[in-house]
Length: 425
Picture 1 (spheres, helix red, strand yellow):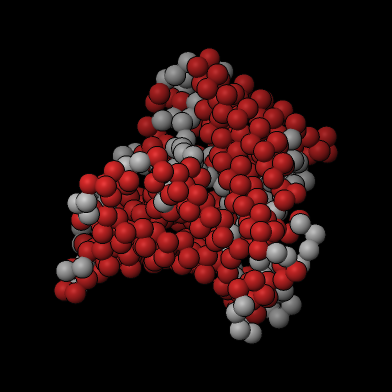
Picture 2 (cartoon, one colour):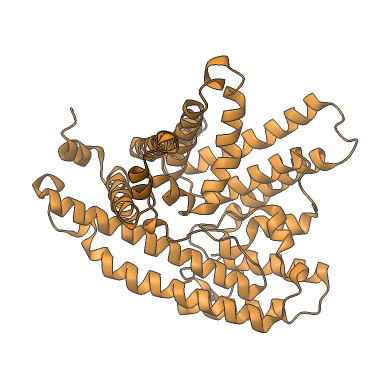
């Protein structure tokens, strides 16, 4: 917490986002200041930036030095995008590709440095042998993805407006800063308070409704299932019966859903009261009939980001080869595995997360292959079954079990996984 903030204000502000009275008190002040200010675009932009910075500085481990790092990342990204978006500045296609590549690579390296301790230790070991503590930058996972999106869309000439203040507010918008949703720049501009010109009363009603839903999920439903998660059952994994392990994994899956979707509701509701419409992130994913549909409706802003910036580029690149071009399903499956391997590595640095990503990707690839086969089936009885309630119900059960089992790769250590699955040492 910066020293220039008075002690009383520091105690009032220093709190968890969305789950404490101090946060909501500070948020009410921000809303009053922002929504009641005269409709001057520049003034509102500056006020929003100041409010976002003040709210972010209340987060643990985010001090003025880390804020300076964030602003440096933003300024670098904006500079690359301005070069790409300015007509005549980079007429050479090769130069444009080089600037876009530098913008993306630098943001990936920044993400790797702050997210993966082994990368940080490898770099800092060459600078100082005493550097052993991990430098943590909260929000870097989502900030990097927004920055990469901005550079790539500028490269494709898809950025509609590119004012520095608007870009900084897009990057540092506090409701979505910690855990998303990963909103897109053009969507942010098109759904801002000024652009929508929506009355405060309607935004307040819609926002409060989402906040109530989010608080109920996080503080009630997540709290109910948390004692039954795998690590809270009071026994080592190797001593548990199979039904106990599955019960613990079911609880983990439900806890992740209630906690994360609850957070998303709170972020969307808070942003709506501010006058901004954030994209939806969950649409009853645990009630979908296959793992492909589940991921299309779970953390949707991440899934669409991976689809746009990993899956399709990989497909277009590999489509140039003769063999994969003639086997589109195999081509799609390889791209799915690449995208979900990156998804797993993005979630965490241990090998478990990479395995989890491949596990999810393999599930989707199997569904992809199955769907191709199913489209060729012409038997009337089989077609009736595919469209039946039984097919849907069994699909939901199988999908939930597959997804829940996958949580073992996240919540268990390698030793626990070895004991659970009988893997070799």
